[in-house]
Length: 179
Image (cartoon, rainbow, N blue to C red; front, side, top):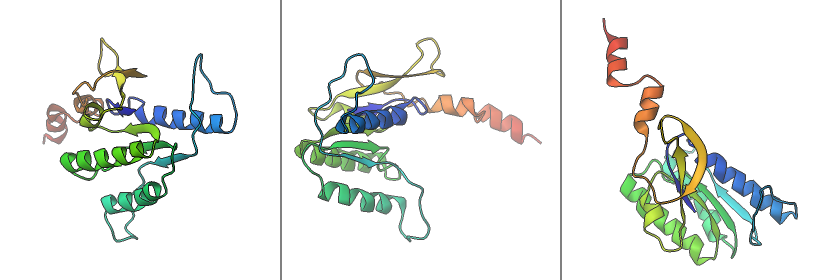
């Protein structure tokens, strides 16, 4: 699955929850839900963002690649892979190219999982990928529903909602900075 949608729409929380469900099922525990079928996975592997460290002397992209490399080199057949907001410091074009390669690599190793991203092309271009979109309220796009819906990406980043929520519109800034 590739999950796209608005900031603070529940994408990362959903991915983490699914990782827990898969992990608990690997332990033989019952999974929550009315109806759920989970394949038998060898392992759960994750790549979530970390804070950039000034101690390493390398940039965030290099740190991401350094953390991602062992996951890919040690990829076993039938892993459940969780990737959250990978390559956020790269240009959209570069993040799209690298994200596509990462997804293809894991898919070639018969892995399944969730890739959370704002790069909507990743949900549209690859065969075998199911697109999920974090939804907003139909009447008010400022309200997040925290529901993932199976559909094509909407083409809307909802950045203006965040700007308005934190009173950072041009009008807000002018009013605050007026002398």
